[in-house]
Image 1 (tube, rainbow, N blue to C red):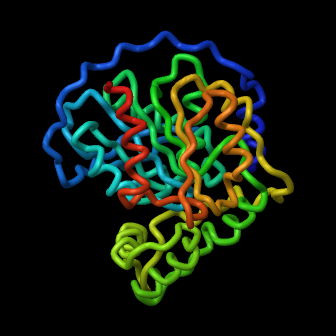
Image 2: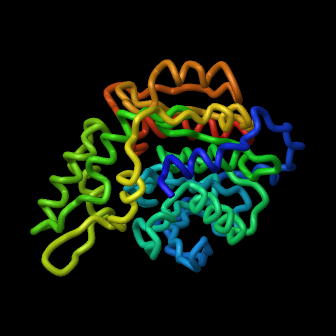
Length: 321
């Protein structure tokens, strides 16, 4: 089944609205704890349509903190994209950054058609069960935001605050075609430097980053293989993009309108995936999201500097007041 067909099938019965859930008591606020500066590397067994698979994640902060922040990356990225955000939030949260299956340190799916949003949603619910908490806050970049939207739109869901990083209820056909041109097509690079040059090229919409920031994104995205260096994801994640021509925008407004929790939208001012007028509409309907726009950036803000992190931190920590 193609990605678009799976999306249409999955959302066919989505309600226009959902009942507002009863507020879940939050754990009492406590003073910030000392930052645990290094992540812990863990994994969890998940099950899909064709068997088990392993999903890896990094965890920051006090492992006993009942306040959990889940950060989920974009299509070809991995959980280490959130290292800077995680360090900033670790005094307040147990921060959990999964590598969506097929990416980073996670396992690869045997049936490539299973690289679909329903698989990812089920995996995240398994992860939250592993964490043994009733509620979470959520930051999702692009694909990670779509996963968060789906979960947050369902009755009795665990998300209490939602940050959507450069994604919304309309995904433009032009952006999907752009992404489809490179996802799963990266070659084996003859050197690490060649791999970093490729990442800088395909990720140019991230905006102006320092050499250290590009190095971090590259070091966590490349792995050494026979003959050189390769991207740290299954090329098969691109198969759904190529099975069905992308002819129209994907509209998920019923899903967005069903979200009841406080929501924030971060938008790259030059984004081709989340258009300005869609972000404006998101501020006026459904959860009536707060909108923060990042100048000089396309798809998507990388959340690696203080100016991008501060509004997210303030929004998430409003719940403590």
